[in-house]
Amino acid sequence: MEQAHERNVYRLALEQMREGIILSDAEAEIMFVNDAAERIRNIRSEDILGRSMLLCHKESSREKVVRAIDYLKTHEGKTFRRMVTDVENEKVYENVYAPLFDSDGMFHGIAVVSHDVTAQRKAEEMKAAYIRAQEVALDNLRDQYRGLILTSMEMLIHLLEERDKYTDGHSKRVSEITAKLYEYRYGITGSYLDIRLAAKLHDIGKLCISDSIIGKPGKLTEEEYETVKQHSSIAADIIRPLDPGQRVTPMIRHHHERYDGKGYPDKLRADEIPEGARVISVADAYDSMRSARPYRGAIPFEQCVEEIKRNAGTQFDPIWADVLVELAVTGSIE
Image 1 (cartoon, rainbow, N blue to C red):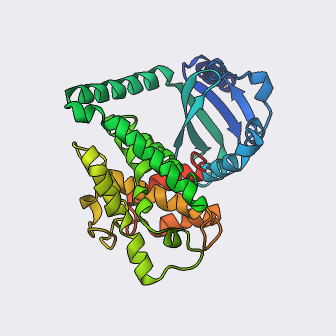
Image 2: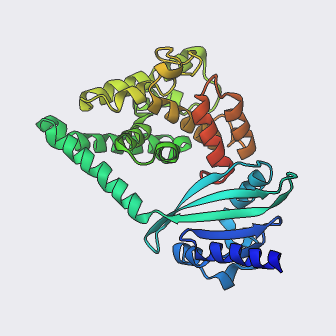
């Protein structure tokens, strides 16, 4: 009788929490949904109770859900977060996924805690926009047109990608991945907009490199590779006059530096490399592996993840490599 009373108290507490709570059993079958979860996520408990978490997602997302579930089953005490943008209902909410293990280390299920962060997200975006607007207002006339000129640079990136079918969309994807990594660790800050722009423009220097090299279907010669390596310096030279505050240029120049100091153009190492460049580096490498190139097809997901892990601490900043692996394995990035 006492145990039944305790269970009832626990259930009442879960039902009345302001955070959305969804619980599943060890087979990922949903066994509890509180009112807040229905409200935050715009779902009905009767539609998902007794169903597999897998079947509650679109078919195109199920591979990522499987990866997330497998991750939780093998990582006791580890949680991960995923930001969800519900465009239809104009909401943004954060899901925190936590595995449920008993004292003997046996896996019993998954708890998903949802927080409605729509108002917070809008406030952060407004704050970031306000800070940027203040900075622009304090700049001289040339700086006020900086954004317009940089937008023109983005148009050049589109020309670059149309010129090379194998990198079509690469800069946009790298920008999106970089933004997700940065936001996951720091949220939307004043630097968020700069790093996203730097990632979008990181390959602009390739416009000055011959088509015969950029689109070469076979392995590059040593001389051709040295030519390609100049693209980050060329890009920095293009952007520098348009970036008087030097917020974007260093990230672009140094996105091919290595954490162990063996990269280019300046052989910087570890914290000598601007943090934005370290984020772009791992995002750029991941997308490059996931995409087809003239000399190879796209590399399978698992192999890409292992390659990032293997090069953490040598090619990549280990902290940002870990963030990318976590977001990739849990399905937050493709």
